[in-house]
Structure formats: structure tokens, C-alpha cells
Image (cartoon, rainbow, N blue to C red):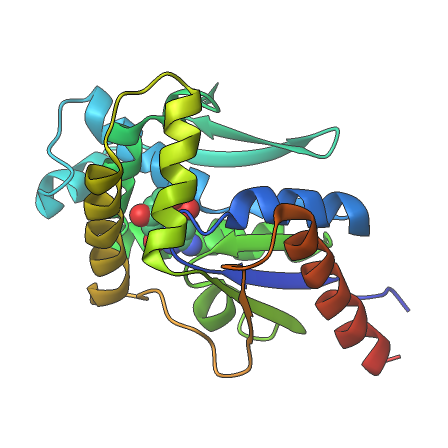
Length: 230
Ligand code: DC
């Protein structure tokens, strides 16, 4: 009989380090990492490129219906490639603007429905860590391992601020904290599939952990969960 894929749902707020942690943990476990935020960012980028206001729901829906925001994900030697209308957008989706646009368009049910379907298809036959906001609650409610990453807003803002500073950006810590609190509000208060911890998720507070300790904790939680079912 064919073994079912290993599925790990990893949710958490903005700048909790989810994506980098998921990447490193996936490598250690020898499975893929699907970054679902990249897919919402691609839809946000599509709106920006067409000069559509991401806050205008009807305009975003019209864009989807016109087939102008087709998102695909491929894995190339284990690395995720996110495509928008057939073109790789790995770099362009990382801007602050694309992040804000993603936060807006991710509020709309139709956007979520389309992307959740793709995510469920991708994880049907491949073992992966899937990171996002609604993975344990909506995308993979039956995942054997669910982890909810958290860290205080101040710790997350400090990490983000250091990262931006090292990239030469001149933002202030206060503005980073304000933007992060705004994103937290949007992600947790939206009507459709808001960020929330699944009842059966293990909470991992990384406020006092360094990167390696956080990765090790994820790998340990995953191994323990699978060991239990052997
Ligand atoms: O993880 P990220 O910052 O790249 O995500 C970008 C935005 O997409 C974020 O504001 C919330 C949204 N998102 C979502 O609504 N559901 C997901 N599964 C992943 C991301």
C-alpha cells in the first residue's frame, strides 16, 4: 500500500520567521516546503502591476475572472518556484508593497478559495511543511502535525527591523512595529479564514529561542507526532 505523505501545518503571524524556519526544518526532514504566503503575494503583485487597488474587492475579483492572476507553484530540485501568469515572480513578490497588497487581497473569499484548492492539490501526493495562516484550520485540517509559531510583536518587529537595516533600509523601529501591528490586525480580524491557532496545534513561542533552537523544536515535534503513530 502507498504510504500517505507526511504533512506538517505551520501557522503564525507576520515576521514570526515561519518561512525560514519551515525551509530549514523541511531540509532536515527531507521533505518539501510550500510557502503559501508567496501565492497571496503573487495575486497582490498582479493587482499592483495592473494598477488595480488591492482594497477594491470587485476590481480584484474582476481581475481573477479575467484570468489575469493565474498562480502556479512548481518545485525545482526541491525549491519552490511561484509563477504568475506563467512567469517566475520569486523576487518581485518580496517587496513591502507586494506584502501589503497580499494582506489586502487575502481578505477575499474567492482569492482564498482558488489558492486553497491549489495548496490542497499540491500536498495530496508529496510530503511537505506548509506554512501560512490557515493551514491547520482550513487547508490541511487533517494534518498529523500542526504547529502555531508565536513571538511577541516587539520581538518580531525587532527581528524585522534588523533585517531591513542590514539591507540598507532607513526605516525606524517604531514604524516597523506599527506596520506589523496593522498586519496582525488585518490577518486576525478578516472575515474569511483569519489567522488563528487550530485547537490541536502545538504552540511554539520563539521569543526566547534562536533560529537553530526553533528549527530543532519543529523537527522534534514532527518526529514525535509521527513516532506516536508508528
Ligand atoms: O507570510 P507572508 O507575509 O508572505 O504572507 C503575505 C500575506 O498573505 C499575509 O498578509 C497574509 C496572507 N496569507 C494568508 O492570508 N493566508 C496564508 N495561508 C498565507 C498568507
